[in-house]
Image 1 (cartoon, one colour):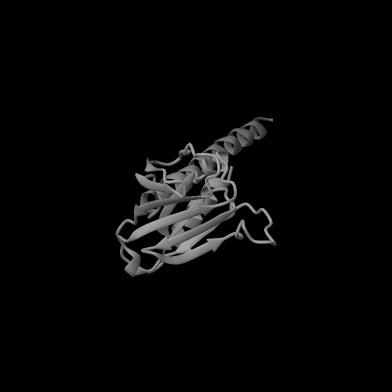
Image 2 (cartoon, helix red, strand yellow):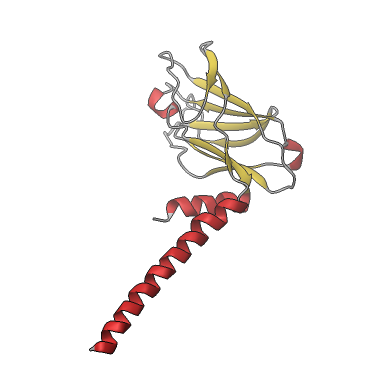
Length: 176
């Protein structure tokens, strides 16, 4: 009985020590070496209805009825190396990403097309970047007909970093 109680106490203490160690490795070590940063703003926005202004993320824009397109722009950070990417979470019909005017990513269908089917871009939207993209203008364009304010408000975050760090960050956020 005496040895059983000592064994139980030892097991509890060992479990507690293991949990603390895992927490330190999981949250502290990855954070200190991660290249991931959130691009919160300021973002310049323009709509096809002539509205324009600045916003930071997460945020929602109050849009006029009938707005069909919103363009968000900001300057990319400067970096060294080849394997950088942006990762964004949003919900919208059509999403297009341009770097200095060059289209790099397109998701969804044209809302005016005959075979239009509503889709949600709330999947993993990750756009690879090249070294020469460092410091250039990033544009994210949302299109739908009509553009719903609640969906525009769902542009929750835009992250920037190496592809491997973005995957680790996403994994860490999804693990309970």
